[in-house]
Image (cartoon, rainbow, N blue to C red):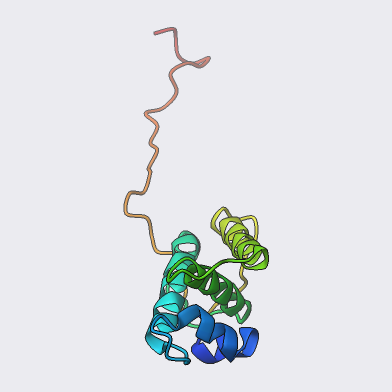
Length: 142
């Protein structure tokens, strides 16, 4: 499930830019499949960062994650099909990744996501067990 939609992308970047980014066959229209793939790939990239702290995919993602998803998808679209990236596109991508890295290491939170979203339990819990004191007033040296 993508965190942003075609309509979100069109509202943010405009139809003309989406045509430039996705129209691989020079048809003069948005290639819906190419755009959908870029949004899914961007969402998967985001999930790779979020998975350490949240159950992914997020059932109800905070709205600002859509912006990150669009920036990542836009960057990815520039990297294929001979499209050129700009400094703004590169910077927005780098900023999105920096934010996601902060989420992954626990520096920032994306806030409450839903009642059912929890961090999955670890498959290899660490358990420490002591066999008691080795030294003490009531025990002699070994």
